[in-house]
Each structure stands twice: as structure tokens, then as C-alpha cells.
Amino acid sequence: MTAPLLTLYHRMQRWPAGQWLFSRAVCFKAPYFASIAPRITRLEPGRCEGRIAHRRKVTNHIGTVHAIALCNLAELTAGLMVDASLPRGMRWIPKGMEVKYLAKAVGTQHAVAVPEIPIVSAAAGYGLPVKVVVSDDGGTAVFEAKIEMWVSPVKRG
Image 1 (tube, one colour):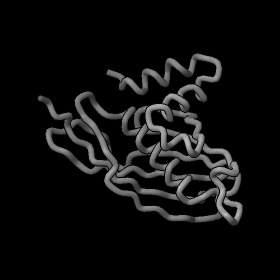
Image 2: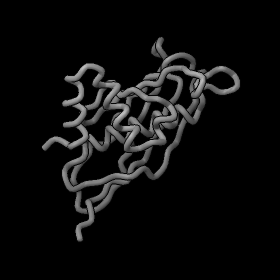
Image 3: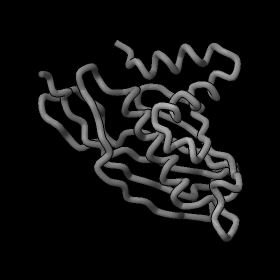
Image 4: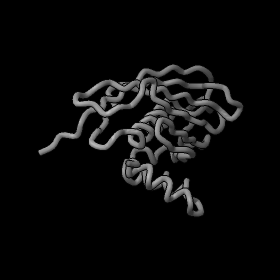
């Protein structure tokens, strides 16, 4: 069975401005992410891609995309990927994030989130490492994150 989030994504992709509408809906549900004005460009089980434009509100004092904006983009794409990939009856929450800043982040930033191990249904909770790479328009990786998600069964009762 397809995850509800993935069903919504596929439905909205058929509409004019569907990516924009889906991204806005996600930010309505999780308002903090609206601060980076993300655009989700691909969502499927095991993969999420998104981008943020180089705008003043995500720029630091040296003219590059701010480190926390990159962290927000990484957490958003990782969370959406996990949500779209989880078997029914499972839930997730981020437990931690390790980041590496590899180059100056200038221009539109593109994130790709993928799991490092298969996502499975389990009777007990487990750690799911998610890798996110953010690249600039030229394809240069400027940021990497490893986000540890805690995946567990939904508690009944």
C-alpha cells in the first residue's frame, strides 16, 4: 500500500504548479521549513529530492547559503523520503544529524536523500541512517549530512 504522503504527492504532480503546491502543503504541516522556501522536485520510496533558491533570507554575511538552511533542507528531504517509504504501522523521528560543509554554497542548492540501509517493518524500533547530499547548480557537492532516524512501530491503545 502506498504511503498517504506519496499518494498526495502523485496526485498534486498532475496539477499545474503541483510541485509548488505540494511543497507549500508540506510547509503548512511543518511551518518551520517554510523559512527556506523549499521545492520538492522528486519523491518516491527510497528517494527524495528538493531544492532551495539562493535568496537573501537563506544567505549569510559572506553571501553564501547559510549552514542552517542547508541543514533544514537535509532534514526536510530525509524526513519526506522516510515518510514516503515506511511500511504501514511504522513511524519515525530524527535522532541526530552529522554534517560536513564541503564547499561554499552559492546559487540554487539541490538535495538528494536516500536511506543507507533498507527500510523495513519491524517489531522493535531501529536506527535508520539517511544520507543527504546537497549540490550546487554545477553538480559540486557543497554539503553532506547523515541523519539518524528512529523507526518504530506505531503504539496501539
